Length: 467
Image: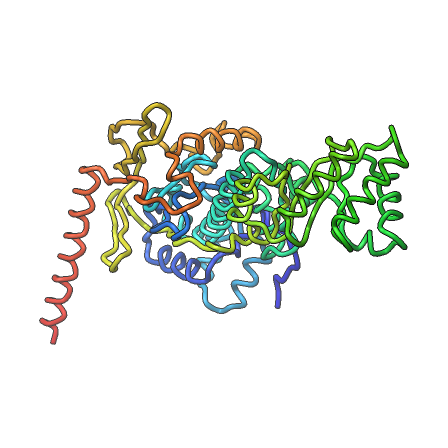
């Protein structure tokens, strides 16, 4: 079929067709009926996963890049024409489509809670509609992964956490942008070289079992690797972990003052018991400077247990559990119309409320600790700090909307430091963090719901009259 390509990388610059089909059919119907006034869509999470007390907002940078570059290529248009669903007028308008709207968002790294807007898009409705799929996809992925990583980083209690997850993550884009989200959440570095290059992350890694297996003996393998990479971390559990430690000690005796090995990694077995025994052996040999890195099936619960048990560990390599956020891989995220042509909009669907109009969130602190949030109408005066800030106007990114990743990481750490202890904890909090809706917004919501219900009543009456 015409228009097919085989790119494996999603970077937000040439992916206009990364949208659900119904976004395009709705856009065609909007435009063909002249229904193209400005609309506001709000992105929020309806409820937190059962094992999360908070989420870390992430993914805004990719959203802004996508919106700045949103354009349909000749190949895209040819493919859509071949589908036989769209009018030529619509396809011609798509050829000229650019995002011309506004975005307000909480900065990346901000802790967020249920029903709070993570971002709001205001634009001609067809533009905002087409963008839905990409926005939800990127914010969902990175928010889920940043939120998981933050828990693991906290469990490590100051010890570095390294991202080892790429090989078991769900595709190239998840592994690359996931590494970015991990770093924002406090992960020290990544083994994923593409992500390290693309996002300016520290590239970190040790060695694999295959290198050890390919040599006649473990000690021969250590000699060969250290000759090329003298300050490496040696993997010691290929055959027998404590025998591997003995080989590290033997190598140190051989090399004497030339020995610079930075650490050892244990990747199987009783990690805590083996780390304690390894530490005793290394210290007795005068190798106190050799660090111990633990990996193998780690998550925040196992990391917390190791730390609480006093295991002598200097860092953690974490893979699958963090890479797929295995205990909470999804979030109930929504991108919903909340205003059209200057009027609030909502839904009457059970358990799926939509707060109408453009909004703001005010966060209060006492002695540097968060005490509660208020979801309010945009333009309301409120106590505390306003979280939503302008990041795009008229389709152009606002200066300062995209700080470097080091600044985003520092901001995220500072924000997490303001969380109440019971909310930041790994265990579910006895009471959720307090989030309320302002009286003015609640009144607006009630009025819009009554208007919708009245419209249903009038429509039902008219239908009965026709019969």
